[in-house]
Length: 401
Image (cartoon, rainbow, N blue to C red; front, side, top):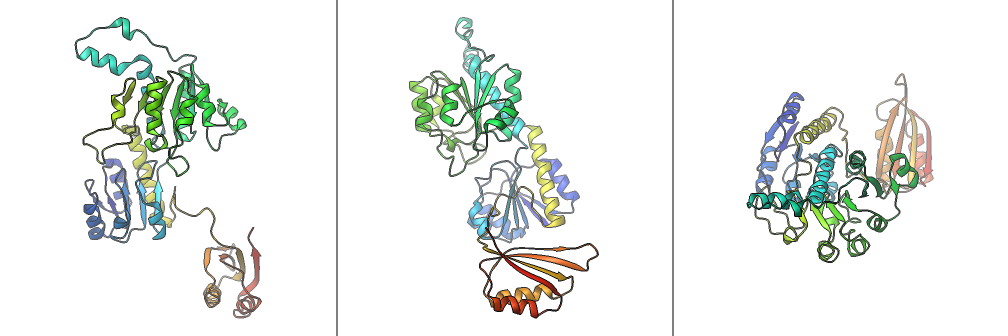
């Protein structure tokens, strides 16, 4: 198996892949047309990326079977185009959760104690203990979490260590699950904004979450609240955020920006960072040595499973529900040609197979095949399948609900 790594990757991960017997091409500078050429020339089976964009031209350049995003998000990969080409897309969810939560709390502390402005004044030769001695403190404050995936959940024990109260919202959170987690449940994101002193965003970017933190959210936020975003810039309506900074005096800590440079270095021109009360970091929430080692280990685990079994861990682009309407169940003797006969009759009936599994019973004398079909089979087709092979024991067709 040949693997192309098109981003910086930990040495431990490279060593792990080599120990699997994989042939590696390590080209962390490959981007755009350079990556197209690398895919074409290497004929790699697997592509490993971090922040590199993967578009249709890259997908069409070679014979990729799997793309592994060495990180949690996968918005830089054209997943729809990969699905249309039968290319698996996998990621490493949760491996950077601790790192991102640590940065989120670093931003909270920096906002509360005005660390960035204080440091800037010290470097400019200005001493103002009276001004920078003004801080609210975090003990007893209420932290509101929007999104309670692995990163959001990592925020909870850290908040408790600071003596904070925690409330939260997520699509899957219920009053019971909130109580089990030890936080207070809120039914909407607006309720969270209204009821907390510090807001921390931990949403994945999806069509449903794009711009979901907008004017109606900020309108009910408390004056002077702290707002932290270490997830994706696109989940926040930046115009509404700027208005809230101006009119409601929000203090804001950002690790993600609407106008980030495409590469690891470059000019930065997002005007939001110039507003008073706004501090930021360089989209480095997941960038700790611990997190990168964990992600490298997970990438090796994904590729090992794929190499040894053909199955993909953490796959993100398989259909939750196929268009199948009927299930054909064939109990048969475990002999050559049985399934070939069944599929030949399905082809004659122009009925497409959506999913299929064949399970062998102990002793390998008999097996049962479950075949999901686009539409029902006629009595004549069922009879041809049943009568055309003496190794078929039983045949049943079920309508799927």
